[in-house]
Image (tube, rainbow, N blue to C red):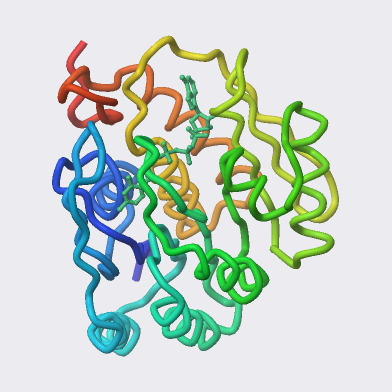
Length: 266
Ligand SMILES: Nc1ncnc2c1ncn2[C@@H]1O[C@H](COP(=O)(O)OP(=O)(O)OP(=O)(O)O)[C@@H](O)[C@H]1O
Ligand SMILES: Cc1ncc(CO)c(N)n1
């Protein structure tokens, strides 16, 4: 039978459809992979920010993981918002069981685009110590990179050094440092343990960047589930997210959502 690429996201939700599980599933679909999802927290949010959060009980997150892993093939998975340590523990247990045979993309989500916190302070340390060494690739933005490395990131040199530190010292499989929060070109650096790759695109003048990080990491996950190399997976995902920002929707009164081919209205 033909290979059916199967991608799983473990993350929080966004009823306004631009970030979280909703962005991930849309991206999986766009990239012709079979998408699955395990919900960690149900978040009441929109383009203006986060209004409320309801965390699912850990036992129920575990039940969802069991439902997926006991029955479905998973070729690549990503994690997004994981609000607390007990959720992280159960997710870590399931990822360990895959014995590194399933590509694991970690988007180390800490705050929403609006600045609202999405995980509790102590959980950040668990994420860094326990989950990070299990990753195939971690995709921090600049504030997340600063937390993970404990260093200030002010230049592209700092970004490259941080990528090497996260892999060599903290044990991530690879690190993709995203420069969305810097001025100038939208430059990201990937370190895969051997060399640094640069992905540079023009900065698009828009405030509609809600969910860009989710879309990017979901695209990398989809590409890995199809068997692309890490470099190719990031290269195509960077192109995908750039176009999704270029055609982003000016809807909602805050930071509007990204947009994909299927819904592109020019
Ligand atoms: N205005 C822009 N124009 C072009 N590319 C951008 C722009 N803003 C961000 N990017 C790119 O989008 C991708 C996502 O990066 P970003 O740093 O925004 O992630 P993030 O902060 O995790 O996203 P989120 O807002 O979802 O938390 C990166 O490749 C980044 O370079
Ligand atoms: C559920 C969720 N995950 C991640 C982000 C980051 O954009 C968000 N706003 N919401």
